[in-house]
Image (cartoon, rainbow, N blue to C red; front, side, top):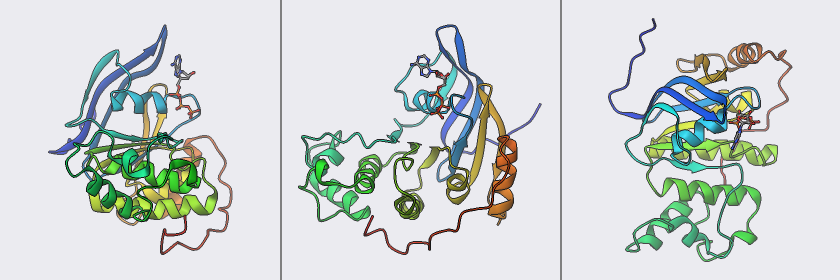
Length: 247
Ligand SMILES: Nc1ncnc2c1ncn2[C@@H]1O[C@H](COP(=O)(O)OP(=O)(O)OP(=O)(O)O)[C@@H](O)[C@H]1O
């Protein structure tokens, strides 16, 4: 039996989680704890149940066994922005906030993602990267203790994705929610996460911490091997963006 240390103040505590679709058990006794301020990335083969897990944690879907304990309702950012086309940007961000001070809070959140001058603009006028930045603002304005990210950068071009990584790192360092990022991209997981998990057969099959100066290339190769993929040379990286203002 393995003993795991449960943080004093977890963002989420998942015990023996079960989730079925009809006869099919997709999540089968999964345990997971994410601390506040911890960034966890979740990898796994297509169809292994990553989105199913994220939806179970979000409260969007019911669970069939075990428990999910989160202090407050988590915020979620999906692959597509899911902004309401008939609402202005600030109204999209402020949905769910108390009316009093909502515009000011939305304005502050939009400023944080570099869109402070677009409060009264419309979703249709945004690029894909800008729309995802509004989706991030909408999530963070709730001051969530757990932020769930379901492949939020997958539809973006490579340069925009790198700029989004820099922005997300900055925002997470400031707001310090626990984060669960579902991604197919091993490099993205290694670039962003404190801990990378690999899901298989309905549970967490493998875990790798990246703290303490772990060499990214070695970790990447280890994860690819664990996923059953031969490591390929890394594509030349774009220069690290120093500003997110042109995403
Ligand atoms: N609403 C549903 N009804 C029935 N089966 C479902 C439903 N949603 C997902 N599944 C099945 O559950 C399994 C896990 O799906 P899920 O979307 O969680 O996988 P995933 O790891 O996120 O996949 P991908 O990486 O391709 O997005 C799949 O076999 C899928 O077909």
